Every structure is written in structure tokens, then in C-alpha cells.
Length: 347
Image (cartoon, rainbow, N blue to C red):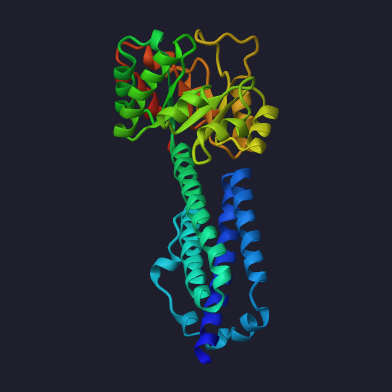
């Protein structure tokens, strides 16, 4: 029956589309996001699709293929050529994947009903994969575009910490990190919830220092860990695969390791001595320069940064800074943030 030949042709075409889309998405997860878990998930889906294909009659699939006579090969739209960077490529691949799997599933219900259920399960997995991949893509883009990252500690604020955060954002802060070492869990959770509400409304990123559990509980955009805290992969397991994980680094070897471990961004420092954190060795602007040359991750210079010494960091290649006391302890946090933000070069 000729309609069965057409059905096998549809299934064959969409198997090719799905495999290709999975590979494009996997490469984005692997080479752009540097995310081992997402890369593994894409590889697993490709493997499972191959198992489904092995249950189908290979002869019928190949016999139905007729690329020269396919009227669709000459049809295209402007949207097919529009890609807004690597993230745009990944978005298009995920949409193509779910569409192809749906087509395979529906036509298998006619040609090979026993295999349709496996494709249906794979389609549902692809929705979750798409959510995680595109969530990471969105946040990765936002952290890469960020220039001013403000660390918030209640005891250093001149006023209520939420009002301080609001002022810093009004002055140009792209990211707010809640860094508290002395609050009880209940107090930390309550403050985190208030800051999450503010940052969502203000469209600023919200990161919590060290506490991946609190970050996950309030739906923060990410967690920041230090060299002696949870490893990047463990922190990501707790907060969720679509969230950001930042890592503090104090040497070029640690920066290299952070990139290999899959961190989304790094803190680089300290640049100068700081009253908020005692450290015996100051890597300084030379470390920032080495990072700017070699490391591809968004790097935020941190440690004792003020509007007065910012020029030294810019000379070293710095484009992003993480600032604490010189903004949140200022009499006018908005003005202090604006002064620093306006001196930073555009990314």
C-alpha cells in the first residue's frame, strides 16, 4: 500500500531530524554550557532513539527515502536562517526535536504501534531536557552580560538589606548575592524570600552564597560556592540543573579547574585587601589579567574594589566586578553603585 510507504518516509525523515537536533543540543550543552549532566542526558536520548529505530524495519525506512524528490528541501522561511547566537541555535534544535518526536510517535501508531509508547516517553523526557537546557541558556546569557555584582550582608548595610538591594539595583547592579554567615536558617530563609521577590520584580539575578538548599527553596537563580564548599556538580544537583553555579578562585590553576568543573562563572580575587574578608595572599590585578587572557567563563573581580581603584582592574582586562562594602555600606547605595557601573566598559 502506497500510503504505508509515505508513512515510513515520514518516520525516516523525522528520525533524521530528531537525531540531528539532539546532536546540536548536546554540543551546546557540552561546549557552550560545559554541562556534563545535560550532555549526558542528550547522549542518553540519542541512544534510546537508536534503540527504537532498531525495532523498526530498516529496509522499509531506507527504501522510503527519496531526498531528490522531496518537495520540502526547496522550501524555507526567513526564521530558519535567523539565529541569535549559540543560544538561538539551541532553542531551534529543541523545538525541532520535540516536533520530530511527536511526528514519529503519531505515525508509529499506524506503522508499528508497539514502538510508539517508547517514543512518547522519550518525547516527555525531551520537554524536561528542553526546560533545563534553555533555562541554563537564559541564565548563562544573563550572567555573561552582567557587569556589576553586589554582595549583600545585613550587618554592613546602612538600612534594611532589601532596601539596600533595591537601591543597588536602581544604581545599575545586575546581580545581587546574599552572603550571610551569622543568621539562623529561619532568618536566612525569610530574607532570601524577600530578596527573591525583589529581584524578580526588578529583573536582576539573585544568587545565594554557599547555601544551595536555601537557594533551591526560594527559587534563586543560582548558588555561589568557595574552594572549601560543595563541589560545583554537587551544588548543581541540589539547586537544579537549570540554575547557575559560581565558584570563587584565587589562582589561575583554580580558574582552570573551575572551567573544567562546569562552573557558570567565577569570582576572581581578592584584587585588593578587604575589611570583609581576611586573606593572607592577595593575587591582585595580575591574576585578573591572566584570567582575562585564558579563561572563557564570565569572571567577576572581587575584593576591596572601589570606584577609586577600579581603573587598575580595567587596565588588567576586567569587565565585571563584584562589590560589597563600598556599595552596601555607602550612605547612598544607589549613587555608589551608579558610580562604579558607569566606569565599567561594556561587555
